[in-house]
Length: 324
Picture 1 (cartoon, rainbow, N blue to C red):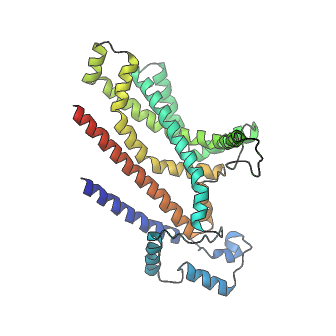
Picture 2: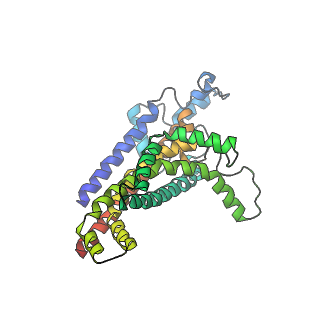
Picture 3: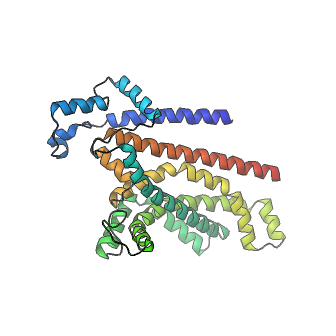
């Protein structure tokens, strides 16, 4: 089984490499279209010698199969090259942007999981009551709202209209802080709106999963036995939650890709300086090296989280079998 899983992940990784190479090249225009002001409105103009050197450096003057081979070799060496648009090493560019996305996505995933588990268990404990009916009405409505529309409304109402939160960036530019706590407070204030938006985007799935699974568990023999023994409600909930860890962990790994997609929209709306905004700008400017490196890192993150979820679930299932 382990060999089969490794083979599946290897094939998936190769498919990602192929898509990652061809996807930017399917876009209209090219990375050196900046020299023609008609495409992007840029004032950049390349002399023929500079253009030829750039074509050679990025292997764009080679046939497509040779470009693919060069791409595989550079990827194996972790050589992501030089950004065409940002005019700096791609690795340095990503290192500067990745922590912001990790902060946003990590916080949203943790908060949405905790809220989803709590609300799901409370809703499942007394199905059909007022709280359960209210949550079953509110959660699908939240999930049906497009994330870009939700982000735009929050930005307009809470950012511009009431001026409660900053409307862009990850922190105040050229800000002077009296203490590290002031800097943290500034970062949190810029994080607030994107975090709330992404949390609402993800919480419904966890809530529905936990609610449905816990309702099924309520009829299990071990729950009925615990109730017959007179165990308190909180103790029984802990037992149910422990048996719900496997589907919850599996969902976290499976939905990470959707969370990345939501983060891309949200970072673009709020001009949050993470990987999502970097990918958007790179697509707009046909910056092949940045697009390829950013997508590769995000794809590897999704694969890595799925692999980690598989390992954790295998360990949990093994422990449960040994107990039984």
